[in-house]
Image (tube, rainbow, N blue to C red; front, side, top):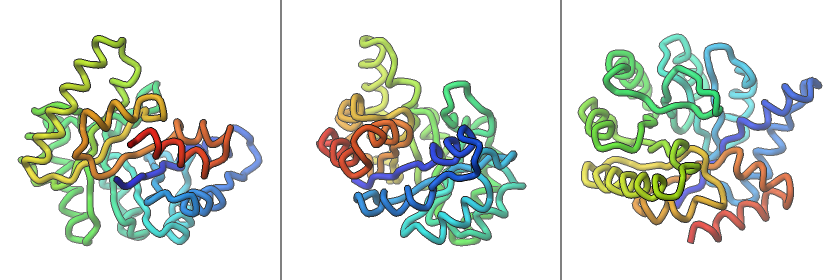
Length: 235
């Protein structure tokens, strides 16, 4: 199981502190030393709080680098210039929770197909974040998508009965993805409290993405210990 760490919290801290320093490169180096398999950062149309210079710097520093972005022709120049190891496509709207929402294939079909073709022509692997439903997985598979990221952010804080039902649906969706031979990642709201239940529901996942949950734990015990604790919970 590959662990991907989203570093979006560091530019956000820079914005909060107002001193222009995010320590992003230091965080990237420490994360890789601690055993993180890939680093991720997210951009939007406003380039706020993540700047283009952050993307350039992280691409140079990271051994394996993922760029998360909305489906946008105007933003395509960033991955085409920086050459990430993976681009993760999400919906272009914002949620108050702070999570980047999943793509609705029915709404995004035309724009999604165009962006996927551009990335494929450039030899850049692409992943599409979708809701963990059978219909969403079938829809993106029909568009030629070969790798998906199932969004778990909505289910981790549900009441117990609803959460258990959502985990069953997640498992059914992950099994369909495996049957269709799709690469599979899990992302959204994952931390040391819920990751075991999510992985038990979807054991075929190849990658798991942590962000604020791991950063929050790292503030208390350090990044190396936090990652070790998370890996223990994943077993």
